[in-house]
Length: 264
Length: 211
Image (cartoon, rainbow over all chains, first blue to last red; front, side):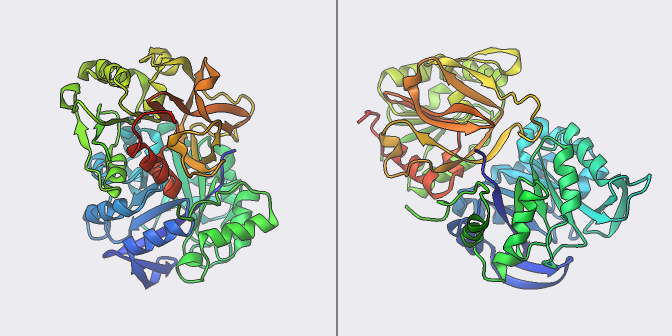
């Protein structure tokens, strides 16, 4: 049976992991490679690194950082931020990344999803969607609108429609982040996560809002997500992925990976 | 440790396999054609990509003959992911593709009609039920999860080939196979954390003998 994944999200500025609330007030958590190694040992099933200042600084993702992480991380990892072309994507993958996350770029030039999937396989192409609750309307039937550029810019896209279209074009996985819940630890935006999970045939990652173990359980049981992204819980709140899984196992029969972090 | 060669056939990303070797102090030879491959040592046959283009590259680079000779010579050979699938006789991928035929059997696609919740490809961690003991599995607990990314799976016509069986969506498939010095995994040991590295290390230390 395929196991539910817990993915640790590392937002990176200058090789330091940082954590903000709704993309603001970032605090320093520690060295990115050391933390990545620690999270692997503590049972993370996957990691995602976002170079969160790359786009604003008009530079490609920090490839050296990707290469350093790859020497220590022997579980799948995704990178995002500063991916501007299939060439940037190729460089990230040759440095050791398994997957690359596209977000604003895919909205502006959806063809990048197709060219990336053709070049590397759709399993390497993760589409990040930033969703904002706007209420159901003719324009946004799901009740959620796609935003880009760190929630600064609204788009014409309904979240479910965009997800379906992007998968048609080549996206192999969707990471669904909700601005209203991001970083506030009140739980994932379950409604839209479930709508997207039911609308597409690729895995969906619930993102933004996890503060307690029950939120992770809800992502799997209520929103039907394939994976749940955690950040604050492991960065600052004293949880480990193994600890989260132990608690889930006490309360549910969800299939999880337990032998992950235990060294041989 | 014996010398290790990784076969590059332009079908995928070799970085993680190379880094897994380096983690154990092994500097692998990255071959881009058969003539690059040293006459001794282990061979890792990795890969992503699809069957047709992969087979075309394998023939073009002379890896079909190289692998046949290496297997006959008793050199340890490890196929990973599509590198496992291509060791069988036939793959249904790309409208059907003759493969290398070192293992009897075929490769077919997952089909889950009426179950849209079962995603294809299978992507993520899944348990491997070991079918027998083998040097590749030394020290690894039964039912350990490994990391998979695949839409097609191997169906050996000789069930004794199966070293590991994994279940997805009610389909039990051969997730690891072994015969003599030839071993293969559908999952990615180089992406499967500590236990994957343990398996990879077991391979690097293996002389190709079954017991």
